[in-house]
Length: 126
Length: 159
Image (cartoon, rainbow over all chains, first blue to last red; front, side):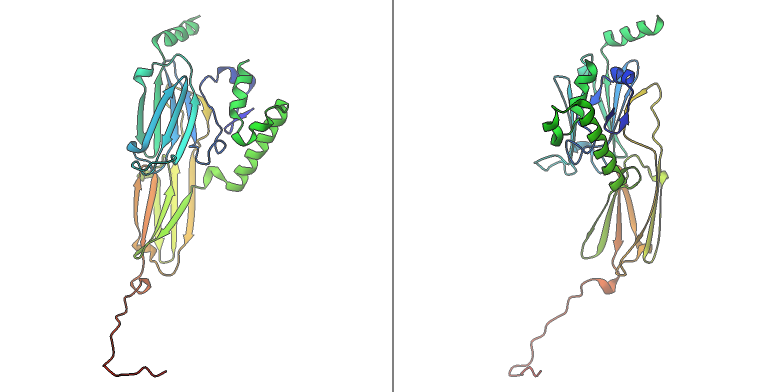
């Protein structure tokens, strides 16, 4: 199956708990290209937003939906130049989400709640 | 169960009406549409270039997210401008990939410029992954203001 250009096997799909809810170039013409990563304690989203300054970025999280919107002109109203939504797992420490913009790449780090991290470590040991 | 809940969200808005199709058909259609789009646009190795013109210069914007100054080389001679850009996309340390769309990039493009600009005078700026090239126009190609004088009183224009 393909979700936004990445082929995954059925077993891999089950692990895929953080994922874009719209494919690249599907929901909106200007969906940024993204990578999603996971570590034992964090999820990491990397989105390509060339020419966007940190002031032009809006990130919101509501009912397990992460929304990234970016405007090339931060002061401008109206529809964003880039936008994409993601489904995130329930076990996210919402208070400690961090975002960083460098070389036109937006990195959003979503820490897992301590319980979620601990559970994962338990599985690893066994 | 998880598989099914994942699938509809990947189907583009335009195809939502076909949601009642057998899953395999809609996935196949989506995949073909995607491949076709990728072939036509050549997404992976062709950064978008936008150009605009002012009175004094031709301005080119090239989207190069993730490219740093070190990974960029621009050479210009008269009517030719060559942009070489390189970036590598690695999985960050300690992480594993869940979903990947970004790829390493090695890009080279030579642009033919109009005779009115001089590529050797180009100025380049890389800000937040966007390259802005300012190519000044040659003096002769800039619009020249022509002063209009009024003739002596009573003078007539003869064809």
